[in-house]
Amino acid sequence: MKTMIASNVLELNQKIRRRISEPNLREMLVGSIVGFVVKILSALCLFLMNIVVARTLGPSEAGLFFLGLTLITIVASIGRIGLEQVTVRFIAACHAIHDSDGVQAIYRKAVAWVAVISTLLAFTVWGSAEWITKTLFNQPGFEVVLGSFALAIPLVALYTIQAHALQGLKRIAKSMLTLSVLAPGAMLFFLMVNPVYSAREASLYFNISCAATLIAGVYFWMKSSPIAERSVSFSSQKLKQACIPLWFVIILAQVSQWSSQMMLGAWSTADNVAFFATAQRTAMLTSFVLFAVNSIAAPKFSALYAKGDMAGLEKTAIWSVRLMWTIAVPVLLFITLTSEWLMGFFGKDFKEASLALIILAVGQFVNIATGSVGYLLSMTGHERALRNNSIISALLGVALGALLIPDYGLIGASISTAAAIACQNLLGVYQVRKHLGFNVLMIRG
Image (cartoon, rainbow, N blue to C red; front, side, top):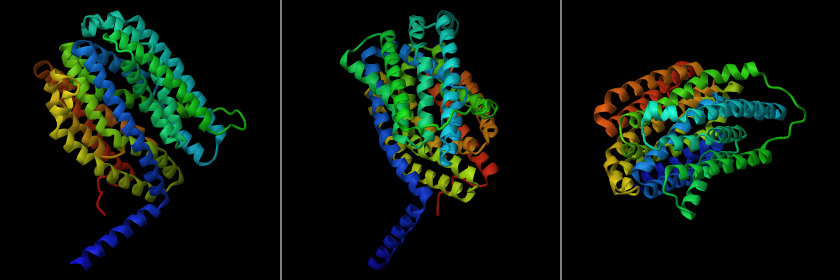
C-alpha cells in the first residue's frame, strides 16, 4: 500500500514538473500567481469599499450611488469603442516581435480615440441628467448624483485603456493595479478618513479616485513601454475592423451584466437597487481567478495564434481552465454556505439579499468554469462569433428581466443576470470548439 502511494506521489510530481517545464505554461503560471495576488488585493478593496458605502450611506443613498456608478460604467465602456481587447491583441503581437514603433503607434491612437469619444459622452450624460432621471428612473435625488458622476466617464474609459495597454506588454501587476485596485482603494481611503453621507458626495470621491488612477496608469506606461525609434502610424482601418465588432460585443456584455440593475432602478425602490448591487458586486468578486488568469493568458493567446502554434494554444487554454476550477469550486461553496453572513457585512437590512447572492454566484461560477472563451475568440480574430454570442445572451437577459423583475423584484433580477452570464459563456465554449477545434472543458488528463 505504501509503495503504491509513493508511486502515485512520484508520478504526480513528475507530471507537474513536465507541465511547468513547458515555457508557455510556466509563463502563464507565474503571471497568474502575480495576477492572483493583485486580484485578491483588488477584491478586498472592492468588498470593503462596498461595505463602507452601504453602511455610511444607508440603503436609499447607497442605491442612488450604485445606480449612478453602474450607469457611468456602461457609458464608459461605450466610450472605449471596443478597443480594450484590440489594444491587448495588437500591442502583444507587436511586442512579441520587438516592434516598439508599432506598440507606441497603437497606444497613441487608442488613447486619442477613447479620449475624444468618452468626453463627448460625458457632456451628453451631464446635459441630459434631468431627462434621464425623470424618464427612466424616477428616483428622487438621482439627477444631481448622475450629473456629478458624468465627470468620471472619460477618466474610467482612459484608465481602462491604460490597463489593457500594460496587459499587452505583460506588465500584469501594473495593469491590474490600474484596472481594479487603485480606484476602489483610493475611494475606500477617502471614505475612511472623511466619511460622507450622501450619494453625491460619495460620487465626488469616486471622481477624484479615478483621476488619481489615470495619472498612475500613464506613469506606469511611461516606465514600462519600449521607446519608439521613429514615429509611425498604425492603420486606422485595421483598428476599426477589429474594434467595431468588439464594441458591439462589449455593449451587449454590459447589457447582460447590468440591465437587471437598470430595470430595478426603473421599476423598484432605491433600497432594492442597493440590495441587488451589493449582492452582484460580491458575487463578481468570485471572478478574481478568471481575471488573474486572463491577464497573462490573453496576450499569450494572441502571440501563439500569430505564430500558428495551435497545439500550444489548446494546451494553454485547457490548462488555464484547470487552474480556474481549482479555486472557483471552493469559493462557490463558501459563498453558498455563508451568504447571509456575507450580506450582513453591509448592514442588517442587506441580509434579505442572501438568496440573490447565491443565484448570482452560480452565474459567476459558470463564467469562471468555462475559462477564457471570450478572450480566445477575440484574440484569434473571431470577434463576430463573440458578437453573436453576446447578442443572444443580452436578449435573454433583457427578456427575462422584463418578465421577472416587475413581479419578483430582487430575485427576478438575480435570475435574469445569472442566466445571461451563463448563456454567453456556454455559447463561447461551443464557438471555441467550432472555430478553434478543441473543447476547453476537457480538463482531465
